[in-house]
Length: 547
Image 1 (spheres, rainbow, N blue to C red):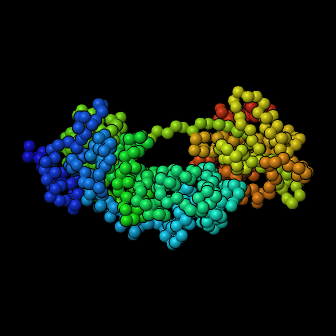
Image 2 (image 1 turned 180 degrees about the horizontal axis):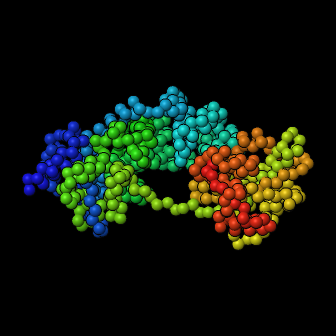
Image 3 (image 1 turned 90 degrees about the vertical axis):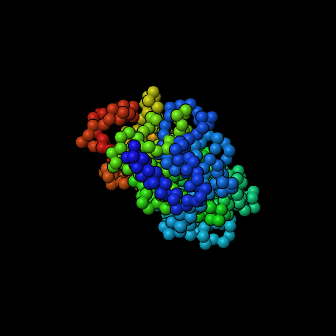
């Protein structure tokens, strides 16, 4: 019995250590009263399900202090205190530690400099808005050059409102998620034409009045540009909060999403809301990363439930304790905590704090196939030219330019004829025998995995006198600066005859070029049968990653 008490005391000492520095008489009294109680929902608060536990050894107060650390009543009614900030001192320590770290370690980024130096509130808000839209689903390193060129070309809302959609698409080309640029311009026009050139100042009005501005973007603009004390939640903040409070339930669920937003609102520093929100995102991007997080460099590691659990597990293993260590449980025996990891996902010792947050299940992108052709006139006046046509103004890649294409449906016959018909609708009569199959490009968009069967056709003579609306003949130089997608650049790479590996790119694109060293996949053979039945399906292919 003595040995058991000693080990339990040692565990409790480790787990209490982060809060010892913030201790008070009230907290010590609570610890004395609650030390042997489970940190759990009461039976009236929990739903009936299989029990689960979390390594909680720091007792929480039964009531939250007024104002600073109080949680909404509906959250208190359904969430274990283990996953909340119920103490004013904890919230203050989190803010102080995070902001001190940010002041020392923040990255020097152009949009931060512009927001700090700009005196005009509307121009500051516009600069923040552009950066936040570009950073959605896009890495910082990629955004920097695009942001710099964008702000040089359109430094104000009025400048962007006066631009054409073609210009916007052209500058945005290669950044992905092209609807972002279009909606950004739509929003700028609304501010200029309907709001007198004045940006809304609050998160609520920003989200309500501006197209394409959601809850996160509105909160970021309001806090950084206008100093509104409103929290934000993006992927980085989700990861930080889920680890700090050991939230192992699906972060995309309604319960967890609502709680994360409430935690963000509770934690945001009213004196420096913009800096705090940027600091939380910076922490998730540079320290609290998805894999191999740098916990030793984390400014809030002493408040991190996930780290405490890792330390407890390590101590348990080093002491060779039999069974589970004698620690407090999050969930009661009468039900499972809705925020703890489900029993189907046990703790993985090799992941450490990366056990949090839980990975959400994503639907695989639907697969589509298209045949596209690079049609070139090498002897055109002024130099060789290639034909591009414009996509519809709605849907995928709206308004961008591409090579003439047709969608392939497995049940249809004569796909080669369909592609020729499409080409002839833009360029007039064409010699069918000159149509050459070159390879394929696979590019994954956010929700579509699109395979392009690439063809090439070279014309003799000069460019037709008339070109239908929605089509244009471009030189190679013009092609590379046009508003085209990354996928079309890959198609052109195949057309130019690059060998595998010479066109480097993203993990989301792949180029296949026929080769004599490898047989094609069964799917490729079927497509070849549809597209070029007179050619042997023995033609091999070699896959290589490209962007």
